[in-house]
Image 1: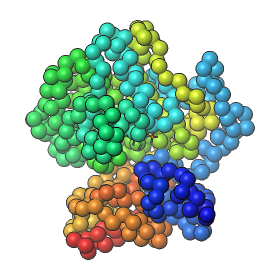
Image 2 (image 1 turned 90 degrees about the vertical axis):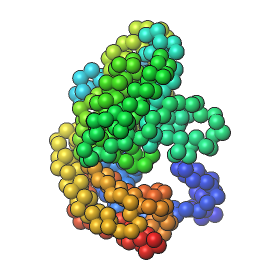
Image 3 (image 1 turned 60 degrees about the vertical axis):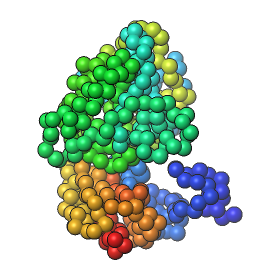
Length: 431
Ligand code: PMP
């Protein structure tokens, strides 16, 4: 068997069967915004390898920090032991996050960060004597990860729910936040989605532990940007109903939307926040769940008292060192100019797509550019075209999108935009 044939036969890929043969590219090297294939061809990683490579691949500052840590101590158990990289990262995160959000749990993936947030919420409610608050609520259009509880809080229409024959725990869903980012806010709660939340909280009084939502950008569930004012209303309703508010910033955190955290567009802070992906500049898997002191003290001071989670690789020093180096890069603030430049480039560059027959909508926020088609994209055709032109894009359903590394140059961005427009043109020929 060739390496690719062996790979197809023996290795699962994300959301793919082992028998189908979607295009597979063997990458031998990644540097800056470029991926190099085994055939020597180069392509721009227009996906930032799924949101995480904010500073580009193999960023020297991060590689140096990881190399130094690797030579000293790649891993040590976190039970009863600690180390400087963990403490230093916690200090940086506490400085970066709003006051009060300062009790950090190190997780190993975004999904686990979400699981831990849900456990924290449930345990804090139980410790406060709210035994019946066992359920969670979320908005349709959301995505929170692939573990069981996280899946149960993904929009049922993502298709996950159908695959598991009713074994996902039922949760409560309100409709997607209906007012788009950039549109005028609608005060009427019947129209802005908040009345539905209020009604849910009233009907299910005393049953809901927490409400989880991706602030401002709903990512994998549809790449939609909603009005930040929704979050202010949600915060108010959660407070009134005794529901803990959880923000999932796994995809949006660390600059992607033009703010350090997407919640800054709203100026609203949650009780618990989930971080991942770009936390290490994408250089190694890592995530964190950060709770408010109030939530943490409820868990620690009450019954059952212990936070029931403790993964083997918790607080991995190599990951902590990578995250510290990545946060140092963000501290200079240069990323703000880069993300603003990319936002402007995507806004101007993708504008012509608006007039194309196949295109339903074009959305840009920070370093995220989305074209939504009227019908499903011929994914293989689009993908093959882009790759042949040196751009790695992964269209998904009706969505064609990019979230390039912040270091993407104007010329490279132009290449990405050109390929996206080409795909729009070809799709439009089919209309
Ligand atoms: N939450 C959000 C908003 C995400 O986008 C993702 C990953 N796409 C996750 C959680 C899960 O993260 P991971 O894939 O690292 O488990």
